[in-house]
Length: 207
Image (tube, rainbow, N blue to C red; front, side, top):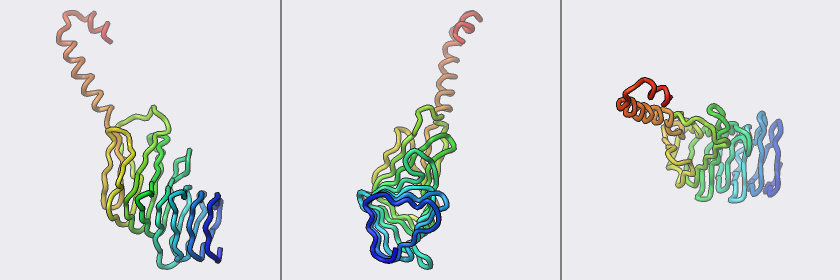
């Protein structure tokens, strides 16, 4: 695309490379499939408050000297209903209305945004468990990786007792270790009950 490009509908990059040579302002949906690439060719790219960038592919912010993706909308790795990693080669700045939307589909299947350059954070990180039967075992999920970081997300829309840890190269979301907590409390409760029992039959009935 040689001229200014301002999509408000849906753009699907199913394979190959879509090259944007001038200012691009996305107000719609851009889906980058696995193996697909958007190359801005050093042009500015802004994802507006109504814009969504999603998928499993790569957004390359320049061929030689990467520029910055300004995100005032939503970035959804994998897209809605699928887990995956979206890679951005360059810098990303989250505005006040910008969001990173993360979904977990199993204990080993979670979205991730991989930024090669600097992540300037603001806006909202949103976490959604797609199923309610997941084991909360204290696992740390690297939902965001980056070359460097400035700031933190203004708002964390994560479940109660989940925690966020900002490290030098990533942001981890950690589930509470309910298994250990439950085991500890159950053991304590069982010991208390058993200590007051006077016969083996009572223990058998408890089990």
